[in-house]
Amino acid sequence: DTAVSQTPKYLVTQMGNDKSIKCEQNLGHDTMYWYKQDSKKFLKIMFSYNNKELIINETVPNRFSPKSPDKAHLNLHINSLELGDSAVYFCASSQAAGYGNTIYFGEGSWLTVV
Amino acid sequence: GNSVTQMEGPVTLSEEAFLTINCTYTATGYPSLFWYVQYPGEGLQLLLKATKADDKGSNKGFEATYRKETTSFHLEKGSVQVSDSAVYFCALTDTGGFKTIFGAGTRLFVKA
Image (cartoon, rainbow over all chains, first blue to last red):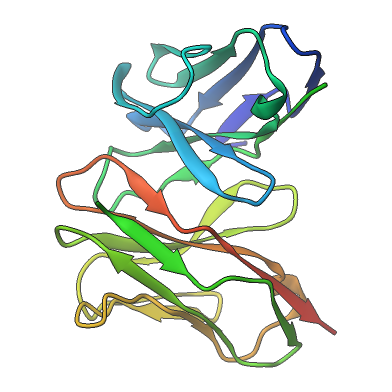
């Protein structure tokens, strides 16, 4: 059983389109995250939810909108896709937010905007 | 603000060589420190962690010691294998904060 699963794994789309990435965790964790990894492997936090409440909202364009229908799911919707949005997006979860908590990552969603 | 600095890669070693990847940090409190590993085409996974000064984290032959006096958490392994080829990330979570800060990652290539 995959602990943190995200779909789709690969996504190729045209500029201007809207797309969503879905994420689910079956670890019973309270906290979920979206990270963006660029081509140089630099990892940047985008959002974090704790028990469906937004606790981290980094400086990302408001074309990116997270939604957490329950604490096991955190989806990411992206409007009006741009070339610079091409990256790997990782969903992740942890038992709780912050100090000492291990983060469990999904396998990533590889987004290519053409 | 909090930050993590790790040595630039790539690091290329022959099998059975000794590995050190340096990591230093800046934090306002007493952070917990982590090493994560990312194998090709996969997500990151925890390699080891330490939550207080002088703690040593260890796993799969890798180890790192939390050094408060030098604000460091260097990763070491005595004898690397080809299967250790991956990108290694040092990270911290500060006390009282929600955010885990990751270093830029160090790519390791191990040749047979």
